[in-house]
Image (cartoon, rainbow, N blue to C red; front, side, top):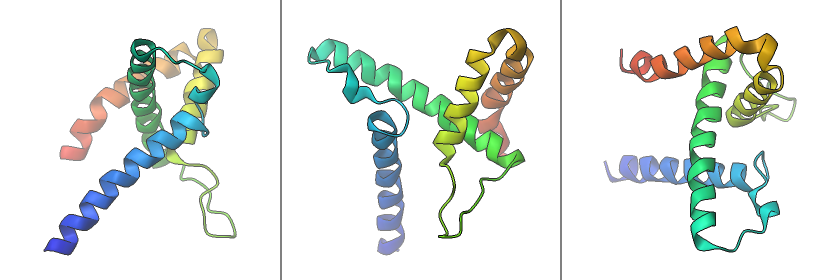
Length: 118
């Protein structure tokens, strides 16, 4: 019983670690901002947290339809976060032609928690 609790806690900690990796080097590159003002840094962290959740959930939805390629060394080609971030960036860069896809994706994201509970 205790080992299951510890494993669950470690899994939660690992999710936080992957979020910080995304903040630093795997997509958002927030260290490049050189922000030192506490209020601005706090605001940036809040915005990045929301963006991370949106990108991660987008990646989870995309991976349901198109699984991530596993390389020869056994690791995934891209993380779920990276798949989601790349999808969102592509949609935003091509917003005029991708508007319908964007609306469909948003509707899936807001339905996604309900799908898990079923």
